[in-house]
Image (cartoon, rainbow, N blue to C red):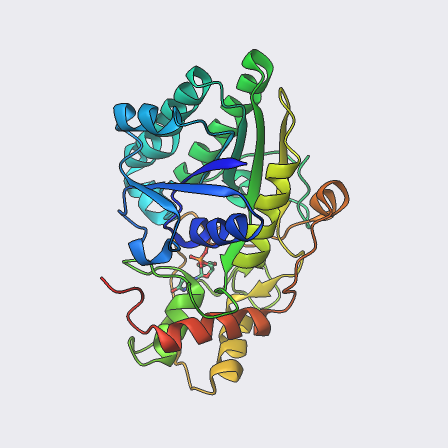
Length: 327
Ligand code: UDP
């Protein structure tokens, strides 16, 4: 297929671009590079350096005969979304609606959407299945849920085929060490912990130690970015016109903040000082996927099911790229 990938220079997007290319698809990346990296886009992949809000450029791009769009371009910092909700509604909602509108005009009816476990808010039961209530507790989650609703409505109204992948915690790096995670500022636990291992930061703060979890720190389901990429490829191949569907993408295995730091100490063989800090606003205590649906309906299987092997790939990337991509 001829696929346009928005946000294809970003962390998850760039791993998906590589997987699509490997599978024989023809890929064009559309990215404003506000968070993505030119160096993350493989040689030979067409690149359009533009913003999603630039509807003229977007319309021209999408009239080149695409069969599908994978949409990664979005803001994802939960804390920032609490402080600046309109920034999130503009990019994650308004710009995505603009994209769907252009797709409709160009008669493109396959859409894979980066959704999130944050749409579940604070679920009462674990693991989380797709049919559990979606009640986000922060603006980031609201924007993603709003788009899931819009996709379901577009599927009914004009035959859009859309698949929302509800990511748990994207993590790790390409097994061959070529691409990985590079955010500025870095806020995610794994890269922060590995920056401490590299002595680029003095310590890692553990945000909250009195959560209702076994060791009092937040539990997350860390999913390797290449397993996420595989889920996107399968989703693309299984989209049906007029149908909206959503899948959890997680391993079903929970890791607490303390367990993750301990595992990182083993993988890196470094001390990694950690100190207790207040809770971070907007953080649910536990997020744990039930991946039964994606396994049974799409045949997806994660290759990485333990936090140590995920951390090893991340460590390989951070050790060899201590300053991330060339700026
Ligand atoms: N976290 C932490 N210290 C940090 C960064 C994150 O304790 O410096 C915690 C955070 O509160 C959450 C977990 O680690 O419980 C994962 O956070 P991350 O930002 O990596 O992903 P999120 O779950 O927000 O998508």
